[in-house]
Length: 414
Image 1: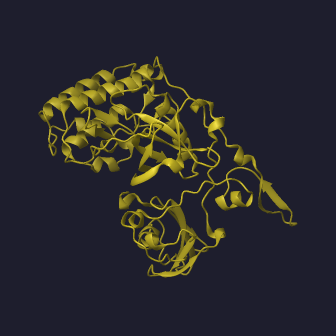
Image 2 (image 1 turned 30 degrees about the horizontal axis):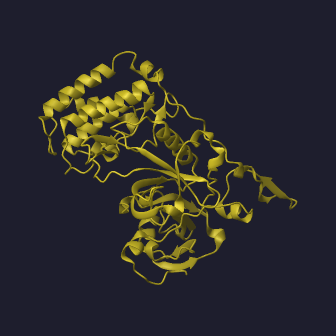
Image 3 (image 1 turned 90 degrees about the horizontal axis):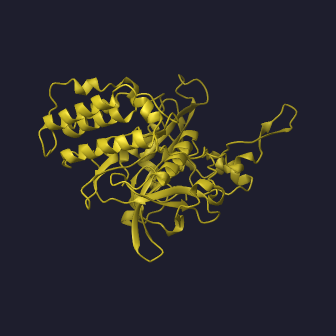
């Protein structure tokens, strides 16, 4: 089940007048990762103060009871429900023009699976489901299904790069294996991909022991990614590591922030830093450094500490882990390491994210002063795309609490 703290995010408060005036009408669009739906929350500036995200606990209170047809709710100054709206014009969800599989030469040799053939077993995290399907031989396959339902440019780019990168990664004993491209059923557009499901807790759980050999495997993997493939994961952390119960090897996953050479390379997110802070967190269970922006973190913050207080079961003394780490860091920090990364001999490459032809369809965006329509192209609301007759894949689904417990109750706003 999705962590309740991760379930909602707000796009901020929109004030229709001075925000200092408590009577000013205020709208907040809140995305629900469980129901995969955006609902507009309406009230006044008295309740929705800037940067306080009151709309998130308000949404959490009602979300499991709302009909999927509800596009907006109105609450009073105490956060209590005052009204609902099913008016499609209230829906500010952006249109996602998923790319047709037939148009993507970079993916032509991938195995595919239709979305309708994925049976949901659990919702693991935002944009990741545990699913089951039967392959061509009738053998059940458990997979992690990763998808992006949001039309935000950065998320679209991350989804494209991760899919193409994962597809190109050579098989490796310390990387979760790629499985299939997921296609929606109507027009065979690419809506996500699956990887093999590994039934294990990630290493963010302090109850999971940690072995010295796993640190060795992690550093060897990072060297391979950085110096052989020219790939920088940029998000090495305990939450993205787990131990395969069958092979007893460490596994890395979640490549959506990965850089290829200079492409999407971010300051302060190099994998050497990632390994150092990951090992510190694994041994000490001290997570306070994760709140510091990557560009403000320096590995000296932890490497210079005379002692790391151990709060996890280890198979060796902390000193053995630290000595190995320090030697590895010193080797990687030698002059020329960045040049070796940028000139990796087996660098992976893939094409840029194509512009979906759906965005070339013109739509009316207001009128001129003399009443003539203004036509434009590019991103648009989903309601606009539907008015133009464009195909829109819909993600909406019942809340997991209802699906899991099979609770039947009347929806608000049905």
